[in-house]
Length: 422
Ligand code: EPZ
Image (cartoon, rainbow, N blue to C red; front, top):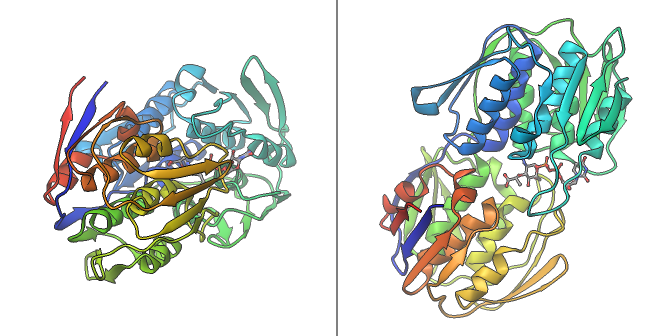
């Protein structure tokens, strides 16, 4: 297992290109199941999660080729001949459940392993299943799999009221509804930019969708969808992560491709913390306004609120802010595993249930720490950039799921960072 070694204490100055969004790509790829024609995704990120989804589609008999060094995904389910998504692949990545809706909608049947939980929480899929049942599917949960069948005439349009916002359940229902008979309305739908991106891609394929980006999605089912070429939207979580690098170390970094509309609530918290964010022709330029970082409170919410996927990262910034910050994690039940590791570096953090109270200290000190999940791992890298001395972050396979070439992007701005093969 690889580790990453960082020698902290250096200001960062330079430019970082932001890649296509992992969480958009993971819901765009299953859309290929909805049509026999080719679906080409450009600006795709080069990540292990994308390789896992590629393997899953190939296991179903679909073609999934990674071209131009992984930046283009050429997909076709013309020869798809297997409707069984196996536990061996699904257990590696929960987003695999997103093949369920498209398989049901296009082929009337599906057998998909239940994803199981993960480090940050139980993460059930009951909302996904209830939405598909509302569209007429019969689901039999047996031996760790969902055995799903659509009615003989295919899925039917339905009005679906989500009791709370779920990104994945909204995506599964949206994918399925494109080929259902009649109209589907999704109430309390997720508003994330990745869902807007999915709706735009499906519309390019011939789907009739209205309301993306709002809490109500209306989909008129069509008989068939065609192929398309679609650019994956820029990754707002990678963007927010790299915006924090100059905030933590001092210096100025321009995040190329960054868009303020994707990180509104996050940028507002950075502004309150004393970090200047300037829109340039090429992206977002970030630096400290007057040398110090103020403590701020953060509460994670569904989009357009503060994203849970940036909570661990901003905690790293607040460890050396002036004052006391309170972070409330409202989306997942166990998403503070980075806190004990940050405390090994001298941070002062008290966790009680879904609330973490961070008391700023003048400096963090480098230490050996361990990554526990994707966003926790990059939070430790950010802390290490500002810490005095050497930090070694182990188990960085977590990091590789969501961040391409992190050492390269950061060393390009002056960080002393290297990967140690393990
Ligand atoms: C997506 O996960 C993202 N993953 C997550 O990013 C992100 O943290 C999350 O949305 C919230 O924004 C992908 O897009 C691949 P949810 P998802 O359904 O869809 C509960 C990362 O770091 N819930 O919005 O699984 C669930 O347990 C990852 O890139 C149910 O109870 O999130 C959670 O507490 C981590 N039943 C809450 O709802 C369900 O059927 C929100 O989950 C579905 C969800």
